[in-house]
Length: 275
Image (cartoon, rainbow, N blue to C red; front, side, top):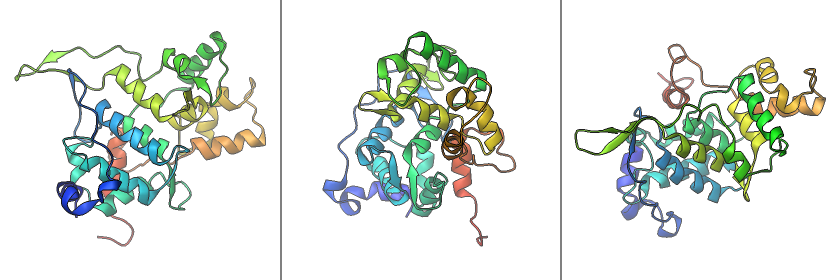
């Protein structure tokens, strides 16, 4: 059954009561975010990411469990925890979507990859990565997977550098903004990579820089892993290959789509042997 049918019947027929997550927090105050149909709002991200963290603090989660969490998010009473466009997905399509992040085909994903794709931030340039590394150096907090949350929150990121979008008033008198609220989006991204109050900055920069090309990833992350002359040890090369070479969904006509759109449409594409 589509996710919409699962959602409408969840309380009566779907999930056992002890499997349902608690009711979500109230929606954030206005202004609301007006987004393309497939994109998640920062409120929706703030509901979904803690559910993933609660299921797998270490970030490794089975595809099956991740699909179940998406279904649970859709079933939250009184919540719009997933965009309406997602509710037409069949469980098999949800599984195809999540499986795009199963890098080794073993039925497991690092859910932070999925969360980052759903945040729909652009890929940073090497210069933007270098700017963050310089800021960390300037405040005396070296790059690691244990950067203090306060320090991480104070940095200037490539996806949150243009200022908050202007607030407009809709026909119904309700204020809104076009796109994500930058501060709320930054909080969502950092929350996905925060463990015990520390931000896993190396992993976040690596995943955000993911490319189908190993050579591209090596250039992108030279400041993170390589030395000043661009050299890499064997161990560092292995890390780049493991963390930053996730294939990005590609298909004719998708090159101008956002990451969320590309992931969503790739999941709906006919699988091998299907018409």
